Image (tube, rainbow, N blue to C red):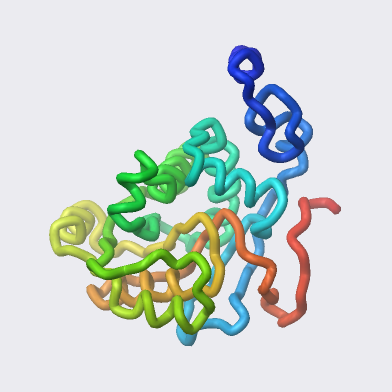
Length: 239
């Protein structure tokens, strides 16, 4: 109640419907999906591990992601963590897992003043630990200089831009190995588009001997097919 009153007094509006008050009103929050499903890109980058997403990248979900990333509406972090948690729960193999967020360009982190992808992965890790999962989050990936903004690039251009763009420095890797020598990795991202980013992250992690089992994302663009190859929209469980 306090958050709602504060948002109202400060002129906040729901990113979904525009009503004054919370950044995500109760009605729009109740319309968010529960669960997750496979979200294979079309075409799928060769060798990509199974990608899971909680919802499609449109409507309220898109407004939430952009609000957090580009407008620094930190109050949207909690519902977005909830969506990513659903995707990770669907994607996670049995046993200990490590969530590895897709790295953001340093210039983007400085401009935004925060690293939303890492924050979402850390939040999902904390929630899943409370539910009994053996999970932790680790910043294992770095981007090489020269990577350009992906916005507006098609699948082929994204793949070219990202090829060889990520590395896994030895320091974080050794620290992980000291506490969890046989880690299985779930790559985490906010939005799955062409799959090029996830595939490059997978390549960099596998190059240092890590076992990548799946990808988990908050949302996936609608240019997707399910595991049986048909176009099926994301829906709330039970509908």
